[in-house]
Image (cartoon, rainbow, N blue to C red; front, side, top):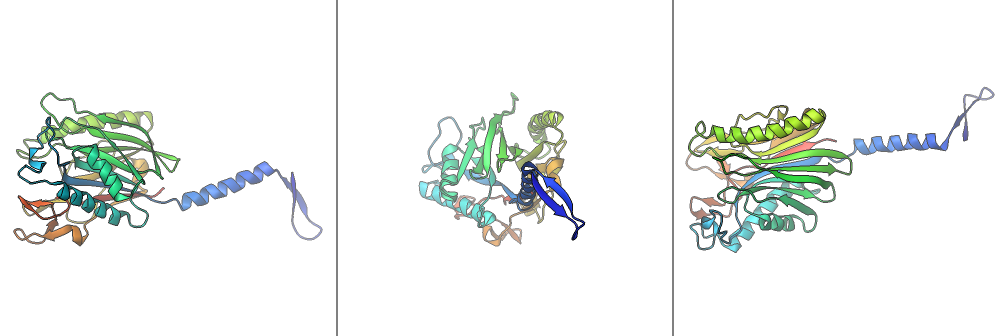
Length: 321
């Protein structure tokens, strides 16, 4: 026991504290200070548009993206594309670097592995599964090893006999050895054939996603959930989650019209502690000569190679913890 006296002069009142009590108080203060100054979690979602490995895959429709294909997709151009994506992510992350990246339109694990290496050697790892997409493009999850521990991962397949599309990637991760967050990376079916005509495809994928989230929230109403990706629609809502609104005109421009195809959806436990924005730096844009204004600078303009980035702008979610 530690004797302590409070009061003035002869009216001192002795109080005794145990070492255990003092230790608990100190621990509480330190934990509070650490929580106060905990680093925000920086999450990026980025459709990188056709990040193909320049070798033919006999079971997918990727012939266009080979050295002999229509795009003349060489290893030199592939390496430049990887470096360009890494440059975008590095600028978003600044000195500390991004913590999590949800990627859309990557062909295979070789592409993601090299991107991790190009981004910051040995600092990042990734999760990737091959999907049934006819072109062979998938989603992937990159994470900073110093902050993120993956606990469980799996690919959620869209089981529909009329639809062969990308899986939804699920990653359960622990952040800074403390908070558990459930991440979902999505790339819903495109609007090819018309938005209304293709709506059933996105609804089919959305129903699978919502079924998983509903089950999760039924078990724990305070579960921390982040859904990210290219939803190929401005107005898709996910039951039980909040669609984070962002600045700017949009993330994708088609025939002069901007739209927000890319989204973050978060659970209520994260909503008030997070904000999202579009990363629209001038250097990843180019002049839109046909429709005026600016648009994202793509790797190709038609068949003309221009060493760009993507037809989508990346979006950024910062979570205070």
